[in-house]
Image (cartoon, rainbow, N blue to C red):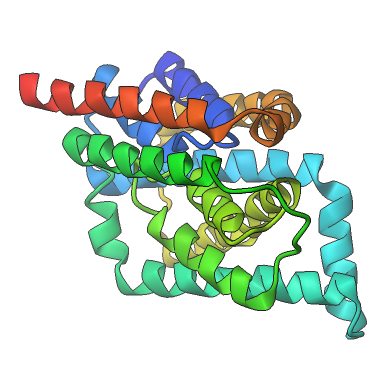
Length: 264
């Protein structure tokens, strides 16, 4: 992987992380188009690094909300901040369990499985279509809602299933306010990404060759700044625009991915 390719992948990650179109799916498609020959483990590691970059940009954008979460968590008072912190923690469990039990199986999907990515994009399109028809409410995220949304996040570990699309769609279908759904969706993934990075560092899974440091760093920087620039705009777009348009987009990309897999 050269520097230009890494930067392109970083920009794609930064731009697609906050829209319900599957950043991991787009990364897998981009890798095939760009001729990336990484084995699944290396490919997944680079994907995790890019997700780490956008997680940092999320922390910058939501720094006040993150500060409230930590404040609420360590106050040990049954107030709104503490309850919100517990909901974030609760939403993490399904993804943590799936990630630990099926890590090797998940890694196998990050090796240019274009047909699979295309089919999962169809699933994302259907989810968004159903969510688009849901009525808007002012409902808050409950503890049970957090568990269900967490299950959606676990399923979205598959490339092609949009994490934000799955979690926001599930939230909206549960009757949760779209603004609150978007906020919860973007905040709930941050601890998981940092946990994944810590696990890989401690286990030695992230171990780049010296020749890979520059392109990986370039991809990280590109993803971070693309995320910073796009985060607020994309979050506003998710709130204001109809999910129907994202559904169409995912369906079109899914068709292209499936057709590409058959032609090659």
